[in-house]
Image (cartoon, rainbow, N blue to C red; front, side, top):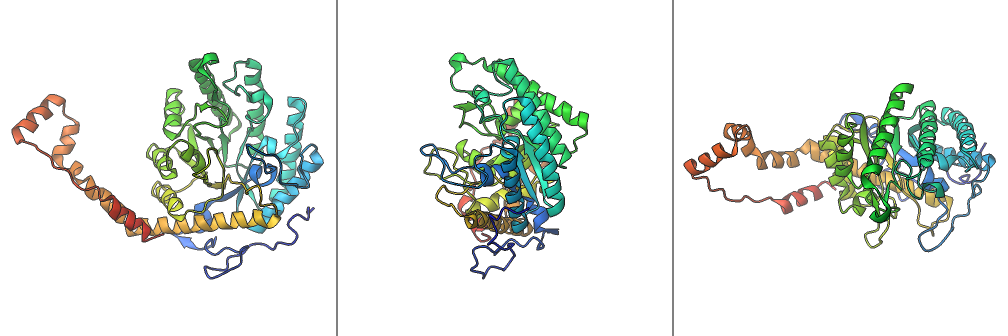
Length: 435
């Protein structure tokens, strides 16, 4: 069945950098070999079901602007019509993966049992669509932030019944992800935080969140799920303060609850910006600790105060992100999910295709620039030169020494270090040669 929503749009193809067709790839050629691997296998693109099909075009100051045939999603018939349209778009774009929340794909029921029935029905429907199109599932997740039941959190809620509802919801979503062959399962704690410490037992909530995540890992092993469990950092919005603030905070949390060998991170550029970081920083932190799992590729408007989730358009930023991804060995189960949405004035079906085409082209340019920098080796040579002193026998011995011995050596050898240039501008100019 087709919905007719994309009937006027042909499948997108690669036409090369000289093309002026807004619905053609100019840089993303899935079969192009980059560092010995097909570009498609490096980037592992995924479409986010929520922003692409569930979002109605609202913002903090105004309501729905998108009028889609499946809005509102208040029946299984509309959920299936949405799925028909989604898989039409997947066929047009040719991207290998998609991602979804449970609330994106089934109507909200009046009970957990109704939600479960809807999720199981649409999971079977997805299975048929995936077999027809060849599109795979990068990851599934549960929406535990939109419904009013989650207003005080899910695993951190002061009401144990909400904790129980959350646990049952995650189990059902993990089952759906397993059934559909998903390669990861993601948890984002949009309401796992607080509005005020006046009514919050922070230590208790963190312990409950840690136990909840441990239960998720236990269930992963029980059902034999081979994919990765990922958590997604964000500092605030919707909560005033979220416990999964940034990559470093999440890594500390995982270590506190002995989960560092079981859980990795799904990092988003927009969330990095809200935390006061660059995307490059968040990826580098996760990679340094062996906890880089997957990414949500988007951007924020630097003049707006909220998470605008725009499609990427900055090649240098994207290139540096992929530089650290490639340097760490590239994706395994993870990939590049477009957790991005149209502007609320972009009403047409063509806008949705063009947004993904542009984002995929930007990522392709960034990937090729990153690969060229790695193959050239200029940044790695600069790093090696800057830290060369630590390769000497005396420096290595110092790290095994103590303050007293170092004190004596500084006096005896009259050590009087002079600063060296960090060469930042030279290195920034180097990067710009490739982008």
